[in-house]
Picture 1 (cartoon, rainbow over the protein chains, first blue to last red):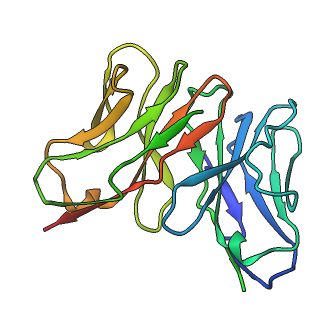
Picture 2 (picture 1 turned 90 degrees about the vertical axis):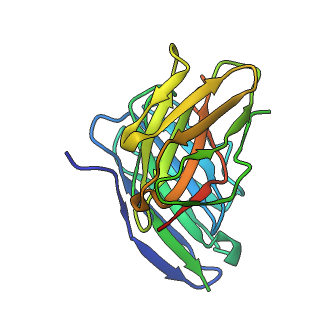
Length: 114
Length: 112
């Protein structure tokens, strides 16, 4: 079946602009995660959605970052007033409910803020 | 606080030699442990995981890892590496709160 897809694959934006990144999880996966991977660094947890429960937003670095998910489908990560330090690869992963289930990762969106 | 440490940022090794990639975590509660691999220009994929039971876990491509609770470690090993094993390897820990913590990664380079 289809894996996790993300769009766009690459995004170049000017400092101060808003960007929207999209994630389509695997059908049936109730859990969805967003991560940020800066160059040469590990994955940084941003936000976690589980079904209709309130999302875990504890990893969002500032109030410029927000994310939404409609039910158990598509999720959108929005970064307002982008800054150069927001440049990174943004990864989305989905899994079945529960922290012991494997996460399936999308290919990521490479964001460059100029 | 929970965290994951991968002490080796880069590991060069000759083809057919053994390799060990180290991972230590800090946690006062039960954990689930994972190793993910990211091949060049590809997304992350699961190598292996420890949930419970036998502390020696076998994964894909001949990799294995051993959970050592007393040393809070989950080191990844392979007895003989191939060129195709060149990749970035990430150790990850999860807890009942559903949040995953990833290490900073180890870049494995296999030298012909």
